[in-house]
Every structure is written in structure tokens, then in C-alpha cells.
Image (cartoon, rainbow, N blue to C red):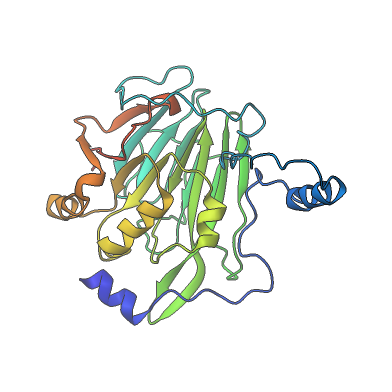
Length: 298
């Protein structure tokens, strides 16, 4: 109820802009429509070929054959990371530890209160509350990615470390009775063929521009508190629009709050609960039916 009340008081208002709000996903080929039109004008008597299927939108995966992966029912493995698999550990609140097959380690929404038991190579942060960022990161962290700019300009983040590519899509947050534009970032981690999106402290319904900038998402880490971020109906709308095969809840404050979210999922989602906070993920084992996987965290 609080989230719905807040959304009604301060609905999302896109900032006017003279150009595109987000970069076009690299898989889109500029000028392709124009070339096709010229070809049709030059050869009017040829029968038009069937339209090609839209390519996968996970950037850097379009260089290879555009083949759909073999999808089998979920088979989540709770073990050490192996070749071609990503280990994801729910540390707590909005912090996950992501470990790539090459050993790159990333902590999301790194803060002073909830941290993994190792010093990660990369950390991401968001600005809404101090449980999502820190001004005192461990000096051993090689890359600190803040999902906002202090001057209010949209952050543009792109980082490649070994087998991991990280980029961001900026969104807005409430700030008192006003809106802080581009104060939050959705971070997208592309590793081992998987596109993992961490929604951060998301406060509004995603626009078509946001969804286009996100591209294909396989795993979404979603705040489900239903109040401080977005009401449950709004979050469900976002999850359906993102259309990821796997949703992992975060940012809830009680088992009652989590169960409230799970009870609204309906028959479209399967629900799985794990006894371990860690799970191994691979694109080949993504669930056939949309699935919510609950990982225990502190």
C-alpha cells in the first residue's frame, strides 16, 4: 500500500531530452532498414524474402550463430563454479556475489553493513540509501562502479574484466517530494552467455526505452519489498516486461513480505526455495517456465 501511495504522489516523469535516453543495444545494425528499402527499389520484380527473425539482444553474443539454446527444465546446482557456469550467492539485502568461470568476483550494491566474506574485484553501488553504497570501500577493490553521478548527469558505465562485461541502464529515484533523475542504475552483467540484471533500488515502471536498453535478460535480481522501492503490482509489471526465465528476489525485510510477493505471482511462475544461498547458473539450464528462485540471505 505504501509503495502504491508513493507512486501516486510522485509518479515517474521522464526527463525531457533532445536525444535518445539510452544507447541502442549493439546487436542492432544501423542502416539495415535503409539498405533493405534500396534493394527492393532496385529489384522490384523479385519476390520479397521472409523477414529475418529478430536477433538475440544480449550484446556480444551476436557474433556467433543466432541459434536458440537448448532449454531444459531448471537444474540448479549448488556447488563450486565449474567451466561455463556462474556462481551466484545471495549475501543479503541487495548484495549478491557473482563469480565468473574465470574467477572474476563482483559484489552488487556494496555497502558498510552487508558484505561478502571476500574482497571482490568489482563492486556496484546505488544511491537511494546507505545500505546500497559506501563511502569507505575496501582499498583492495579494483573497480568501483557507482550507479549515479553527483552532478546529476546520466552515468554511462561499461567495463570489461576478463570474461565479464558490465554495463548500466540509469533509472530515477524519489528524493523527498521530488524526483532525482538518473539516481539509480540497473546493472547488467554478461558472463558465460548469461545476461544478469540487478534492478537496484528501482522506483518506477520501466519505459520502452529502458527495456530496449536492457535487451535480453536471463536472470533478474528484483527488489520485492513492495514499499520502499515499488509496490508489488508495479514490480510484477516490470518483471513481466523484462520477461526473464529466472527471477531471484532481494530487498525484503521479513518472511511475511517475501511470502506476500510470492502469493501474487499466480500460475505463470514456478516457485523454488533453496536451502543454500549459492546457486550455479548456465544458460543451457535456464527453466522452461518462468521461475522464482528464493535464496536465503542474511
